[in-house]
Length: 519
Image (cartoon, rainbow, N blue to C red; front, top):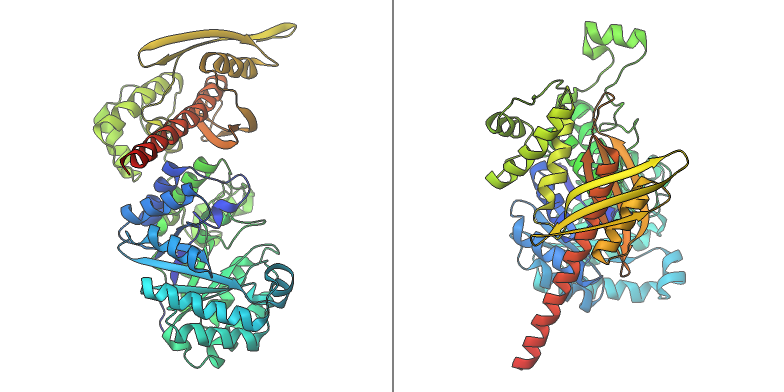
């Protein structure tokens, strides 16, 4: 049997459905590029029928990513499939992924259809998808709670219609490894034409068994694993890509399989996703958590100092964690900064380097040590923003015991400097109110968090905010040694995303009006 395990990443689709993990258009493109660097085999870019935004992001990912198969999800209906193909047809390697529930629970309470009706819908969906795209994946939603005989029957039928991948999801994270492995083994043994398709597993983590179930599926014959970076996803999340990749790499002699994953890009992928969504992994998270390679117990420390194999089964470097101490100082030049970013895996344009260097020199003046994590935070904060609608020019705050917190904020927009002051419950709240007065945009603060990205009392603080404006949610982030300045920049970053979204919406309406007038 083929020893290659294909990694199907659904961070941009199933992962993004995790509460609080939505990404905008530009953020999805950035994440897709990183997934390509990670060497995932398939990127499920979204659910095109779900919204115009999802459609456009799938379409753009399909255009830009050339080294991965790009999948789009669709229900087992002609309209969904046509919409998916409209977005996917630009891909070098497109895949239509269509699904329908097969458990009696879903048939009775959700679909309100008979087994025969679902059987016919599945066949029709795969047949239509195959007429548009050569690579078609079919998923039996809630497969782990489906009747095994019915499951085998429907899988045989969709493979006969041309399905190239058949997915067996543990949709609600209900199965245990032995049980799930038996389901996969039974399918491999009983479906006569199963050799014509790749068997895929898609496990949720409601009982904390998603990775274990996925590996049990591999033991039983599955050759594709569907997973997400940091294990994000609906409810308790999906199987964690980094845990699966490193389990297969570390225990290759036991599992007898391999992946194409560039494991040295794992940590960078994890950090980027955390930055984009504001959902940070817990300290003791396997592979990418801050404690994953930390040793506090004296016995452990003594063993690691003598030989890392005593308490580490993999090296930090194998997942892309580089423990550099002092990287650069305030006297370092652009060339040194560019070289260090290249070592970290970032190829900067001249304009990006200039922006990063400006903020680097400010931080280098404030900090005695500049760490790799500081450099990554600088880049993700400053370079990703690009040309913002509003730029922070000046900030002055007054706060203290028995003092009314007051903030004066100066912003620049199109060469014009705008200034206003406001009071609030604290200095950050006062600054946010001043920004609202200047911009005329009032956002409802949904989430606000600060996280240290390096070490020491002068560490950079990464600030993440989530605000609701006009019924839409926008994320903002910034990095600074001054948490108040960082908080203001993060809020302004979210405001600028809202301004950009309004501008794109106005442009779209103008284009539609021109098209209507032309007709």
